[in-house]
Length: 172
Image (cartoon, rainbow, N blue to C red; front, top):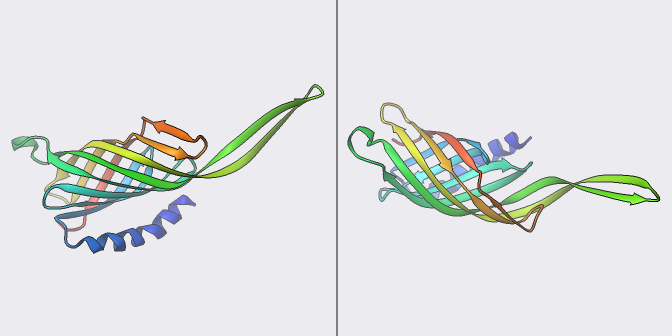
């Protein structure tokens, strides 16, 4: 069910991103990992990046937006490998089970309720990106720890959001 929401949201994200003018690179791809979803990335001539991820995590849906730098790792043989660092935020919702146990007159009662909660948070991203110059494909491996408010607990830090993204370059 979340996949259909992502497919319906992707054209809206593409239309909104087109207001930035003509960039050096615009890519669209799929991110698999802690937060999985559809990603749209814009890299300008100064190697600044703007990335949006429409994804799902914790049985919910979230939009993540980060901005940062996109710099070559080294020249020569690996001139098509880049280091990406970015900072941004996310907003969305999660769904979780709220369980309760109580004992009354020696009898144990269990209850479980489905809960829905909004989340907002801050994200940091660092990763490596490889550009294939012979094909319009980029592959990236990133680490995206974040902190968030609300949700199942009022405050949460997730240090384990790794992702692998495959992107198609729309204007190379």
